[in-house]
Length: 532
Image 1 (cartoon, rainbow, N blue to C red):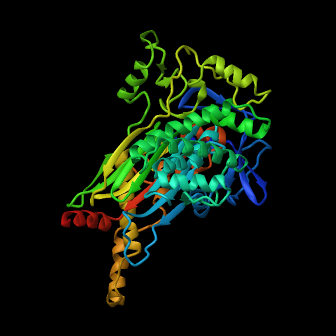
Image 2 (cartoon, rainbow, N blue to C red):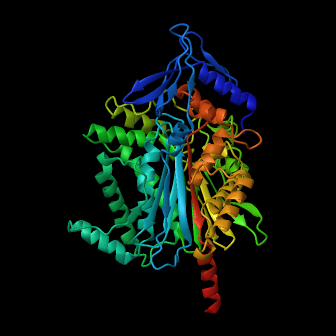
Image 3 (spheres, rainbow, N blue to C red):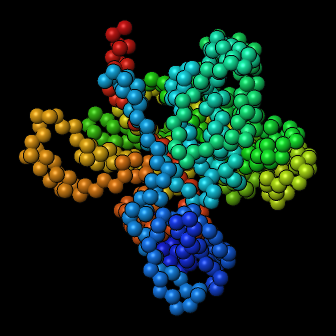
C-alpha cells in the first residue's frame, strides 16, 4: 500500500499541475507542465514535460487564486463528485426469484470498473447461458491498447458456450443459420449502459464462430465437452482465430486495421463458470480470483483459486524456460518480463511474441501503410524460437460448499493495492454494514423502541454506508486507504484527479466483480444428494 509520504507527493503534484478546462458542461483536468517538469519518486530520472487532457470530472467546483498565467489553480472536489466518478461504471444484478424460492447457487453479483489509462484497457463480461446450464463472469486486462481486451470480452463466452452444446443443439443452430432463420439465443448478457461492442465486425465474429461450431459438429460429441475442456479449448481456439484474422487480406480498411490492432495488442483473461455447486475458473495472465470462506465459528479466510502467470510464479517461470533452448535461459525472461517487455507470461493476442519475424513483416507490409502498432519499434530482442507466449489457461475446478460465501475476481490493478486478506475483510465489513442498513425486521417487531435500538447500534458502530455496490467499496479503499487501512479523503481525491501523465504511474485500471453465493441453495443440494 502507498505510504503517507507518497500520498502527499501525489496531492502536491496534482495541486501544482492542474488547470480546469470546461467543455460541454463538464470540467476536465489539464496538467500544466510548461515551466517545470515533474519528477516521480517511483521512477527515478523520469520526467514529464507535456500537457494531457484527462477523463471528465463531474462539475468540479473551483476557486481561483491567480498570480500569473501559469500559476496553479486551487481546486476542491466535493464528495458527490468523487462518488460520481467512482460509481459511473457500477453494475449489479440479482438472480430472479420466481416462486419465492431462489434455487440458484448465485444470489447476485456486483461489478465496477475504474479507468487509469486513457482510454481504459480493462474490460468485463457477465452472462447467463441459455442453451446450456450455468452463468459466466470474466475480467480482462488489456495492454498495448484496448482492442484485444474488447474483442475477447465480446467473443470468448460464445466460444465457451458453443463448446458446451450438445450435438443436437449445434445442429439446430447450424440449420437455422444455413436457412437464414432466427438462431437460438446463446447468451443473456448482463451489461452496463457504458459497455459497447465492435458493431463494425459483428458479422465477421459470427462467421468465425460458425466455422468453429461446424468443426465441433464433425467431432460428433453427443453431449458436448466437459466444462474444463470447453474453457481450455475455447481460449486457445479464439486466440488462433484472432491470429488468423490478422493474416487474411481484406479490402475493408476499417476491418483490416481493427484485426491488426486486436492481434498486436494483448489481454489477460480470468473467467468463471458456475453451474449449481460446480465452479470452474480458467485463467490466463495475472488477474486473480479468490473465495471468501466463513467457518462455523464465524471466522473468515481466503481460498485462492488462480495462480498468476508472471515471473514471480516460479512454476510458470520454469514452464516458459523449458519451452526454449538452454542457450536462451538468461534471455527469455529478463527484469521479470517476457523478453524484457511483457509482464504476464500468458495472454491473448500479442502476436509479436508468437509469430516469426518473417510473418510479422509480411503481414505489416501487406497492410498498405496501416499502423496499428509500430512493430519495429517494439520488436523484442533475443527473439529466436517463437512462440514465446500462449493463451492456454490454467483451469481450476471447485465444488461450492455452504461456507463459500463469495467469489472475488479482479484485474491486477486491485491486487497491486490490496492483499487477499484485506479484500475479503473489506467485503465482510461491507456485508455487515448492509445487514445493519437493511435489517430483516418482521412486521410485529417494527416498534418504535426496536427501531430506536437499531439506530443506536448503528451509531455505536460508526455506521457510514458509502457504497451499495461492494465492488465500488473495494475500489474506493484500494486507491484511498492509508497504510493502516483507513480511508483518507485527501488521498482519494488525489488519486481520482491525477492527470493522464501521472495516473498510470500510481495506479492501474481496476476491474472488480464479486459474486455472492446462496448458502441455502448449496445446503439444499447436498441434502438432496444425501436422501437419494
